[in-house]
Length: 150
Image 1 (cartoon, helix red, strand yellow):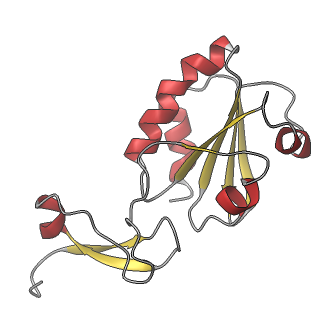
Image 2 (cartoon, rainbow, N blue to C red):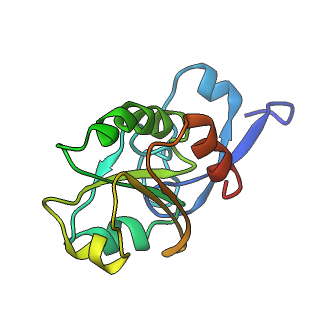
């Protein structure tokens, strides 16, 4: 990379290490990997599925802010919000980890966070809840509230 090439720092979605990524390489459609752990820097562009068993490692220990969607398959508003959550995961890959937790199959985490209605979106940073949105939210509002963290 020459000195005139533009680059920016990207935080690895797996280990949190900062990596310098050249815009030239991105234009060549090369997938940047972390210099520390070797993982795809941007991680998954799809929401990850979280359970009671792996909540701590996937959400609380995440080096990136996490948008957690608590939902259930029978919930019509949850199904309406699902495609929006998928779009946000793609658009913010590498900057925010997006996770989904089915409350019918996992009840410990919703009880711990006193979730009484769904869909509920909780934003975590450094393992702590920093924001909560109840009900179906417009994509622009979710992005606006996430922008404060990235």
